Length: 159
Image 1 (tube, rainbow, N blue to C red):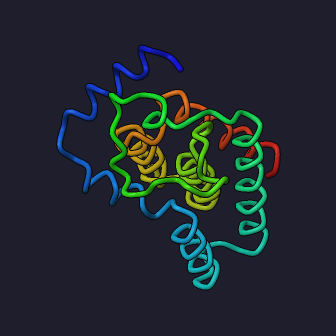
Image 2 (image 1 turned 180 degrees about the vertical axis):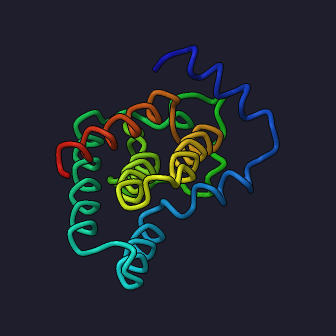
């Protein structure tokens, strides 16, 4: 745990944006993300190889979480509130590094940018998702950086 990260998170959480941050974050939880990927496949935005690529990346991200086993900030410090509305009781949800939501947003944005190179909105969404996870108290800023880096690295390796 880095004390400076906790201080930064505590300052970020002084603003009253929990509902908006949950809205930004929600499409990248497991169930919503699967629905989005299936819908993008059905509507032929993604082809089967893209779907398989996303599945491989997501599995690799989960493996990294189990290797690092970093405790979520709201469990590590009483200063940080959990505004996510979720307790993270399942083993797969307990760990914070790297951020799975940010990984998924980054990885999917790279898949989409490969298809639609001029659509930079995908990058903006990834950044907003990362910020939302810090605000909600479920990830440290370094978890977000890790999620983005692993998303980029895994995309380059798997693609």
